[in-house]
Image (cartoon, rainbow, N blue to C red):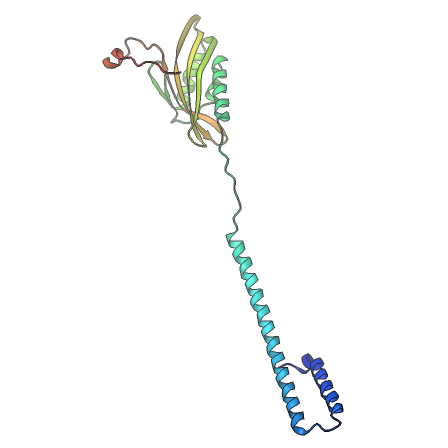
Length: 233
């Protein structure tokens, strides 16, 4: 039921209506009609109270619904991320630093392009293998101490990306230099495997082979007899 304070304006309007009707009927309103009027008033107040309760309940439900919706929104909200795939420019830049270091006979510049790891692997031009960054650096320091006037030409350069953090480079090379006071030259093919480590591209494997290997070098007889025709670079 509504309180007297809540329904006071409504009761006033209803009583005023009864008073006006009483005046119009010139005192002829009997007791039965008066009782009917008060029953209508009581019913009206009850319905008004129910409507207020229903309105309040609806407001509570709406408030809880918006609150729950807000919580769900916070839970499923995902911050967008962007994935950038690195192109071959970084690989080419690292390769250029290697070639520049060889021409300048700069041990630090050359060794800096390789991954500083004991797993880095080199298949050398003379058929030997070197494992580990430290061993490679010692070999470079020993040979570069006697090397000067280096010229190196690269042709047929290809860079193949193997995803966002790996690539390989192939090329043909021709090198001329003075070693221990004597002029020498050689040519061959080279494959380098690069890996993106942090923000830098590093060489993790080098394989180089000469164009004209020594005749004493062990080769399958069938390979000597059936030399494949060269296609492309």
